[in-house]
Image (cartoon, rainbow, N blue to C red; front, top):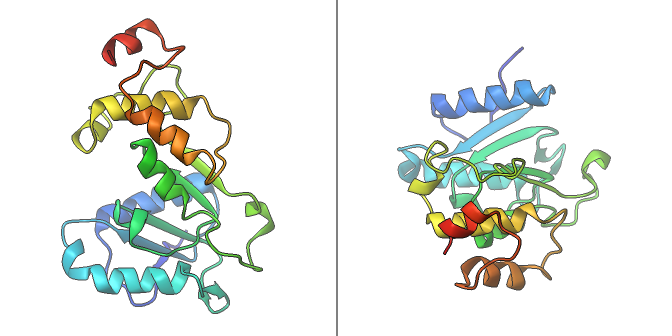
Length: 196
């Protein structure tokens, strides 16, 4: 297997990002044309080049055969939540406060594209940590070092209940419930105690 090439115009990627992209590519079982990472300690000094290359490949005007790769993996930090007008077909995200998960989800099918693959006709969002009936280990995942435990646990409880999210209809209700001091109904007693 040949590793994916970096997106055109990108400097050499952080080796950790490349390794994670390679692992995800192996899991996906399909070759990638390109991979990019918007993360790492040197991000601030590389930001203009990184963001420009990602926008050229995944932005509003990118089309297959005209800059948009057929298969691409973008591994990004929170920078992709708000500052990039990109259009994605499928997304896997770490657990985060529900408003940030919804902000990330706003990158799914953001623009009308005639060249969208049929396999991705429906936008797909997968949030890590929701499959188990118990909350994930927030320390082991390091999520508690980034976000407040209370909001993460409430977001986890709310997102677990959903089969789908109707954008923008569900945004207000989910955000209000995630940040409300009111108890959430139907929680296991140990989780309800953690959130009390």
